[in-house]
Structure formats: C-alpha cells, structure tokens
Length: 206
Image 1 (cartoon, rainbow, N blue to C red):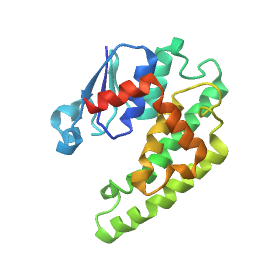
Image 2: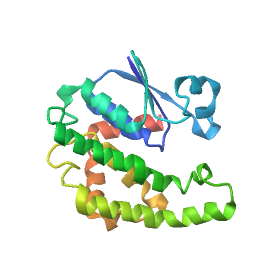
Image 3: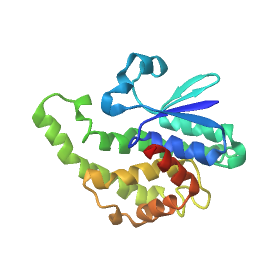
C-alpha cells in the first residue's frame, strides 16, 4: 500500500491528484504544518528533509514532487499519465516539471518562506516584493513557450497538469491575476472539472 504524506495548501496536492488519477490503492497522512509537524522526530524519520510530499512505498520512501509523479505514472501505465514509451516526450515532460520545481515553486516560496534565504527583515520584505514579478514572468514563459493545450503537452493529460494546476492556484496569493494568462487560467478551470481533482480537494478539506 502506498501512503502519501501531505499537507493542505502545499505542492503535495499535485501528487495527491495524480494518485487519484492513477487508480492505485493508497492511503494519506495529513501532516499539520501549522503545528510544525513536518519537523517532528517522527516525521523526520520518514523524510529527513522535513518537507511534504513524501510517498511511502514497499521499497522505501520517495521525496520530491517530480520523482513522485514519475513513479506514480510508471506504476500505473494503464492510466496513461505520461508518455512512457517515448523517451523524448517523457524528457520534455520532466523538463516542464523540473522548471516548476526549480523556478516557479522557488519564486513563490520567497513570499511565505523567505526565512530559508535570509534573516534580515528588510531582505525578507524585498524578497516578498519581488514575488509578483517573478511569478508573472514564469507564467509568461509557460504561456508563450511551454503550454501546448488543451493540456500542458497537448492532447494528452499528463502528470504535468496537476503540477501546473497547483502553481496557478497560488497566483492570487502571490499578487498575480491568473486571468492575465488565458491558457493557464482555462487549464485551471478544466482541471477543476476532473473527478480526481475534486476527490483530491475533498481529501485536503477532510
């Protein structure tokens, strides 16, 4: 049995949606980040990084969203969540998810988690002030060069789509109007219609 350790409002939602899409049997454990449970001794034994998501498998624990998403896709090939039989397309998919991880998510994190990079209050405020510009520039790049439509890679829904969905959902809190990016904005609405997304959002609220 797979167990996903997640927290509402985090990027772990992408993994949760993908598990719902996969048809695999899984359980979830909600980590209370407001109580700093991700830094608890018990959780650090599961994921020493003190972050979510973490996915416990029968072979050990996986961390980092792109790795978890790719693992789920490979474990559920019938769900066709990734172009597993096309090395180039699979690499293109990984490049998109890598950009989300290395750039978009980091841009966002400078607002709520600037303490990871600085202690000085003026520096923290400066980082927060830069977030709307950085997030908007990232989405301009996605909109103009990465998003094919109607899904990220084109006609086929993949593990890139829930990851983009999460980032788009964060735009308002980062001071960016999602409507500035019609493709991403429409994609977000399309995602909300998927039963797997609805189930995942219900689990977050449970």
